[in-house]
Length: 474
Image 1 (spheres, rainbow, N blue to C red):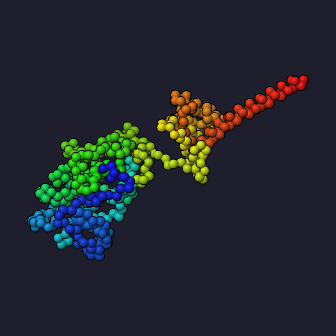
Image 2 (tube, one colour):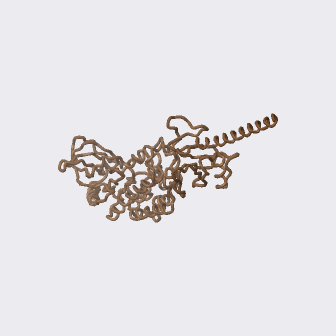
Image 3 (cartoon, rainbow, N blue to C red):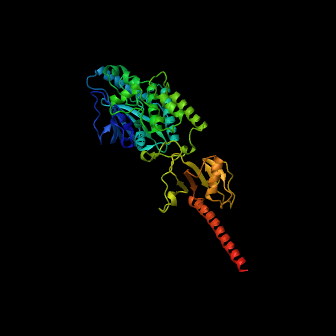
C-alpha cells in the first residue's frame, strides 16, 4: 500500500472519490438550461453514485443554490421497494433540513421532479476538503479545528437521530476563511434489508466500517469510523485504507491493516494518534459510540497535548504546506529552507547567509548544535545598549563571552566546558549565528586575536633586536 501514498500519486482514486452505484442505477442527464422543480440549472458541479449536483438559481428568492438530484433504485426492484425508498428519502431529507448547525450545509428544500427526488442546499463555491488535502498538508492546529467542527456536526446530527452514512473529505466543503461544513445529510441509502439481499456496498471505500461492508449496517458508529479516517488523513497526509479498487480497499478495512498515523509522521502527538485509531477500531464495542463521544475525546486529547507540552510551539504557527515542500515531519519544529545569501554570494567555508541565520554543518552524524547570538535568549536578561557580548547556546543559553574581543577558540572552549562536551579537535561543529553576530564576525574575531598575537611577537622581536645591537654598540 505504501506505493499508493507517494506525492506523485496524490489525486484520489475513483473508489475514494465516490461510492459504487448499484446495478440498474442511472444518473440523470446533464440538463444545462433546464429546470429541476422550480430551480433553473446553471451548470453541473459534480456527479457521484448517489446523483448529480447542479449549481442553480432560485427564481423565487433570486439566489444561487446547489440542487442535488438523488438516484432512486431502478431495474429489477419492485414498485413497492421503489415507493418505500422515496418515502424514506422524503422522511430523512425533511429531518435533515431541520438541522441548523454552523458546520452543516443548510438544506433549503426537498422535492420530487417526476420520479427523481432532489434536495436544495446552500451553494458553497469553495473547494472540498478532498481537493485541499490533495494539494497541501494542514498544520496541526488546523487539523484539530476542522476535526472538532466535524465532530460537533455529527454530535448534533446524532442527537437528532440522523446518521450521515458517507462522511469523507469530498463531502466537507470550504465555507470561507477557516470554516468547513459537512454536506450530504439526508441522502438515504437503500434499506439495510435490500443491501444485505443484493450484496451491494453503498458507502465510500476506506471510510465505511467493517459492519457496513459485511452487513450494510449504518449506525452513528459508521459516522465515527469515517470521521476517524478523515482525521487520519488530516494529521498524516495519508489515507488509512486505500487500494486500487473497491474490493481490495474493503478487504484492508475488514483485516484492519491500518497503522498508527505516527508511522507516517512521528511528530503527530500520541493522544491524537490514539484517538484516531480508536475511532477507526474495527470492533464497534471499542470504537466511540457517537459524535458526542468523539467531540469530547478530541477536546480532551488536544488539551493534553497542550498541557503536557507535546506540541512544539513553532508547529502552532505553521501554515499549510504543499506536499512537495514538506521537509520531514509536518508537526514538529520548523525546518528551514536551504540557506541563501541575499546577493548570491556564499559565506566562506561553506556557510551561507539566510534571513539572519547562518548554518555551518561539519557533516558528522550528530553534530554539536551551538548558537552564537548577539541578543537576549530565553532565560537571559535583555542586553543593555552598547553590550556587544556574544551568547552561545546548545538548545538553551550556555555561555556569555567576556566581550566582542573574544576569539572563536575561547568561545568554543567556554561552550565545551559548560556543556561538558568535547568541541574542537576531532569534532566538527554545527553553528547557528544570527545577522548581528555572523559566523564571519566570529571568525574575524579569531583572526583579529591571532593578528594581535603576531603583532605582539613582532614588536617583541624588534625590541629585542634593537636592545641587542644597542648594547653591542655601546
